[in-house]
Image (tube, rainbow, N blue to C red; front, side):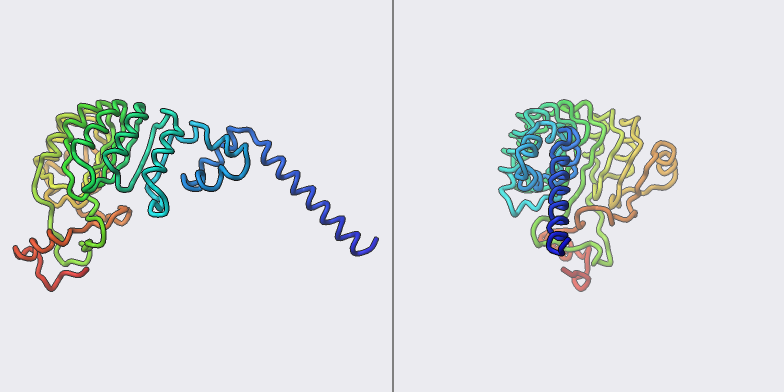
Length: 304
């Protein structure tokens, strides 16, 4: 047998194996293909996977593919983010159960999601100036089965009492300060002095009054005090996970510390690390100037 014949035989064998592998791959049961594709990012599914073949396109358009959506890590500046999000909601055909948007959300987008996803159980939002309190409340009020609400904000004041009454099944609330949008972020880690948030127990009182089924609560950089924390412990008897990092108006000592240790299985204290937090805790230019003017932060300690 000549060398050329041997090489041709090898190439034919390799080509046959490749065709066999391709046939086996395409012959996978739809549910197995779905399980594999669900491991891809949303953008990979929309812009790549569904273009591979007809079978994959059929699977990618199945509503079961779009029940749980995470858009937090999506590079939205490369796409029409709001248009893409609306398309995903349409693909779910009313079956959307979880969505974490993680980017700027408008009133109209939240309303679009709410009108088409009444069975939603988990919602994650980042709220900035383009949203209104009325728009947020109208949207969230349309999710009566909501169990998890995660909100990142810069200075937004939510009506937590209204949310609690509108979502009676709420078990997890994450209400976190996200710093300030854009480039005007001054990292707290660059300051010798970390200013506490302004004392305010409004959120704590609203949570205690309207969210009795709460089991997991995260309040990062909130103004609640010992009084507010005690009220939460009174009003949320099922609470087992509490995260109050950067809540420096709380002093976990004495009876309050004892009460937390007895009640709470997972406790994160005000001074605990925020290394796993997705935002830089910071203050805006305006707030920083006020703090400098009032003498809370020496001018020479500020770095940007």
